Length: 343
Image (cartoon, rainbow, N blue to C red):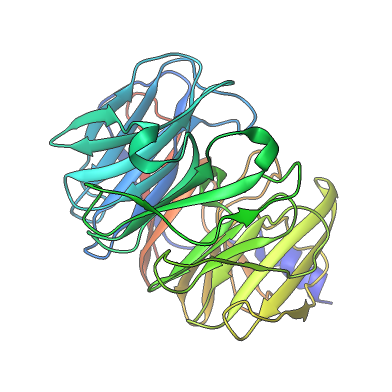
């Protein structure tokens, strides 16, 4: 009966949309990831709207200080054939972003609208894959450094807004083919000074002290972590799926002690592949759309018993503003780039 209910509700759209013109044509770029800092400032990074392909027109950043009504645009790099893979909002004028091509990963810092590469010797991470700021002064960069044969995650931490960086502890060993599932921010969640990051091996990297120390969580799910969401400081939900969409089997696990222990969570049949979740309020979750899994923008109850489609627009990322509104990235074409959805 639940699967029938979900199928009906997916046809129902709720809320009103406002399309924001970024004023640029980025040629095959989409605003692929949006984040919001503690002051409400939103930053986004562009990448290809198709997850498996890079952009051919450089990587750009967008930012807003008025809940997505107006946007500022800056150029991270005009080098072709690159992805924007992660961004961290620090202040209204400063941010960090990571770009990659087939061979290199680079960490960039923005100050006064100018983006510059942060040398690997500064962070001691020469292949950065994830960047996150807990507040304006404290942030972390995660990746690898040194010989590939060592296969350990290097965590580097700053407490002065990025002026200096120091390795955190311990350096966690990783399986041979493990990578961070950070693309478009779909397998990461935070709450206060805690951060959980999903990996392709099914493990979760966890810190509860703003990146000072790290441990590994084992939710015991099949396949890579596809979504993580903290609905409270201690209640964490992780999901995976196997198969090729739309014929997939999903698995979920829940922790009620911030990731220290996990138990299975039953998902209803007919639920689209969950590739990212955001907390809207205590009673609602919002998914992050995906072209690969064919997951639309959905509004979901925490028990996953009811699901509503929020828009028919082709959106690529989402940040939750409050209980009544989300801001979504889209393909950046003339007249488009951001959608604000209110209900």
